[in-house]
Length: 168
Image (cartoon, rainbow, N blue to C red; front, side, top):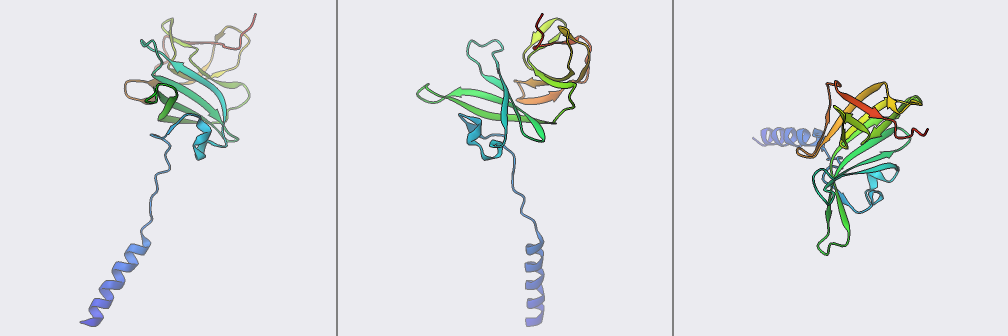
C-alpha cells in the first residue's frame, strides 16, 4: 500500500512539475500618462499621436504610433481624465504590430478617406509618392471605437489616402 501511495504521489508531483506557467505579456488594459511609464514600451520612440474626436467635443480615443528597431506598434487607446480633471489617463485598448517597412513604404494614420469622406480612424501602409494622392495602398486597418479593436479592412473600394508630406 505504501508503494502504491508513493507511486501515486510521484505521478502527481511529476505532472505538476511539467506544467508551464503561462504569463500574460499583453499590454492591453494597461494605463499610463506617458507611454514610457510602461516597461514594455521603454525601447520605443513616438512617431505620431493621433486624436480621434468622432462626434465628441473632447477626444475619447486616439491612435499612438511607436517604433523600435524591429517593429511599428500601433496602439488604440481611450482617453479619460483623472478625478481632479487635471491629467489625461490613457488606457491601451488594442494593438497592431507591423514589422519595420521597406524604404518605399510608410504608415499613414488619419489621412485616408472612404468615398471622399475623411476617416481619422484609418491606418494604412502605403507607397511613398511625390503627389498629393497616394496611388498604392498596401494594407489598411480601421480603429473601431465601438468595439475598441483594430480591424482589417478587406475592401479597398472607395478608399484613397492623401500624402501628409506633400508640399507643392
